[in-house]
Image (cartoon, rainbow, N blue to C red):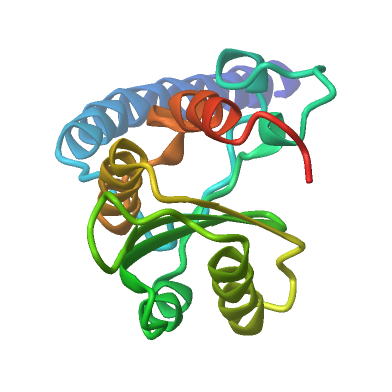
Amino acid sequence: MKKTILVTTMAIVLSSFLGACAMNDKDKDLGEESRDNMTEVNYDNRADRDLDNDLDNNLDVGMDNQYDENARMDVADEAADKVTELKEVEDATVIVTDNNAYVAAKLEGGENMKLTKETEEKIADKVRNTDPDINDVFVSTNPDFLDRMNEWADEINKGNPVTEFIKEFNDTIRRIFPTDR
């Protein structure tokens, strides 16, 4: 009697096990089909995405330079609008990284106009007034820098990851603003 119960129990367990395996194969196919039809969705619409943990591929880590840590970038449209309210400024693009702001400005009167210390201070004040977390404001009227800043701002506004151009941004910042303030 015990032998019959044992054999019956073993048969039930074995058939349940085999049935479960067959169901897993069916589910596996359904899972692959579902994965093939998946659409990548970006719920984070902000452009200030942090870099991956693998910073070595994107930044010159370990150097004692403030520009190496620009891993987050925001387009500061409000700051740019405030800067263009100045009578000396025709157009401006502002990108904020952590506690720094980088301003590319086109002065009224064209490329022949020189950026004075007074105008630079006015621009810096406008930017700091829009974001009290800003410590340093770097201003350039270089037309090539303005073009690049506009391109980066467009990429950020489109929601593209900054990892695609952060190294170029940091290298450019180092060239345009070679000394700490």
